[in-house]
Length: 207
Image 1 (cartoon, one colour):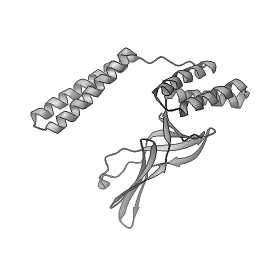
Image 2 (image 1 turned 180 degrees about the vertical axis):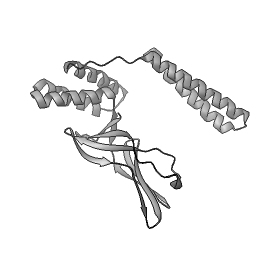
Image 3 (image 1 turned 90 degrees about the vertical axis):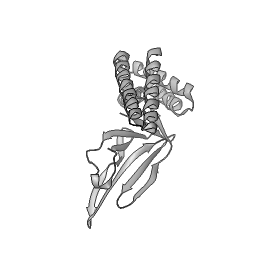
């Protein structure tokens, strides 16, 4: 579940996954959009969901995407429109999301000063810029989970590596096939994608 902080406040934007509403093929939109909601103090305060309509023989749809630090709304009818709904989004890790849930639950149940201080420190680290602060936030989120007596299952890097290597091989095969069809630009794109998959494999192996 992908989650973003909204500005410096306590509200979070949560990706609810692929929408159950599909955009009609007639609108020539190839995306399978996701739905989102805003959570604050453990309550859903707003929803951003895909919508499809037909009005006076005109077909239309609206959906949302996260692009960089913004949540954008797109409207597809006989023309395309889009606009910014939320700004100042900062992605948070799965560990941080779990830590926030665990700490919030303990604060509601026990009101301990330690849990409040842990959540406050997590907020500060999450809002701090830079790669060093991001890495520290991930580590501190694990510390918060441990303080909440939450056990996280270790990630199976071997399975992730095997999956990435298989995808890398498929991308290189696709690049070669495009070369054989004289589709040079497509081949370059697939080869670049394969190189990035290889970098992801190296990162996991070093970690």
